[in-house]
Length: 510
Image 1 (tube, rainbow, N blue to C red):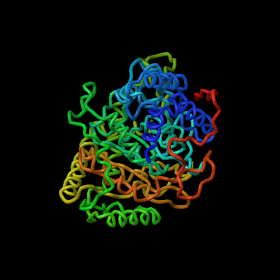
Image 2 (tube, rainbow, N blue to C red):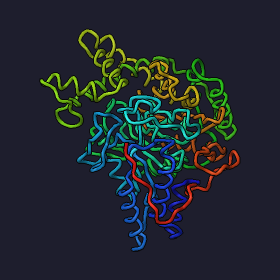
Image 3 (cartoon, helix red, strand yellow):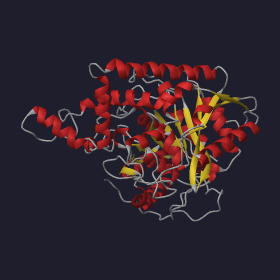
Image 4 (cartoon, rainbow, N blue to C red):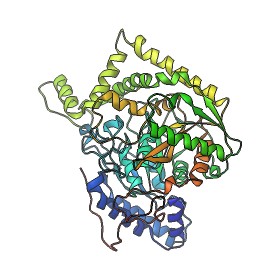
């Protein structure tokens, strides 16, 4: 069952108050933080204030929407007015935005309760959340493993019930990959469907904000709250937003599902391949027609991405010079101040990508690298368009392997390979969703479902049908919970931490 729906029912029947729910999640958050380190900033005071406002509306007899009173975690690269937004970087360690991102403003207006800002790879550059300047987040399924990245804090928080749902950003797989590693559902919407206003830019033509949840329905409800045109974002699409909950039908008979053959071959681990092939077989048993699809340009996706994304990053991060905001290192001259500020403010991975991007955009190399990468990007888009002439959605593994160990992939190239299967979706600007489809050695495996532009409803329908006919989504990590039989889920909407009426969790800041 949807956790959001379960909590909403408890609120409207006055079985529980929004404040009680908020306190329970804040207590569980504080209980698990020493082990997980999912959050950079915990916003206890704000959360209780928002929860009390929801309770006042209920007492006054007002109708509340499904998101009202629901605990939310926000990736710390989304600007929150009056609450520091660090991007997990020393460069913005003390930055307090004077404005609110569109997505967080919409969710606040819907009555959601923000419990904190989650950890990430610095400026969203990474695949493991090990590149944060402040802390390393652990995977709730195994504390020696990474939660994925760059939205690892958000994925871990949802998996461990530190929040009901969370927001992340996805530039090359940074929602879907950690969703797969942490055994939750994560959706990257069509580029332009969700406003990027207030999202600190990494690669502007690729970045997209999206939801995490424990179930497909939770993700659909959160997407409903953030999707829609925003005049503050020039790339925002002026399209009608459907009711995504109407797409949640456990019936896919007659659907044509394409299996991306190119993503099930070399580079895909045996256990992952077996779990995804079993999921494909299950979709066929549900009545879908399965077709194998070739997308030959996908093999160039990784190389293309790691030219385009660093090039855009080098331009976007030029603003962090110590003059306007953020870190400033004192020096004897302006140029020396620039150099010292950027040297001390940025971590190794951010510096690496800035240098790659600056090189690719430099005179004499622009045509050879950046322009050629943009041409290959067009070929990848064309491969998708050809595929969607034949099928409704495409499926593949979300990641080549389950979560790897902390510190295991120090070589940047081996880390970049983690995004092999998610990157083409960003290059084409399409919607993609990851949901659990199996386990290997106790670690979740993700199934990726990709749709054509603005076809989130089809993606959600296929995901929902699969989810409702399997029990992978019911399995919870053992961290901080009473042991349950494998395959049995905890009661939706009931945090497992012991209730301590009237006690508050402590604030934590890194």
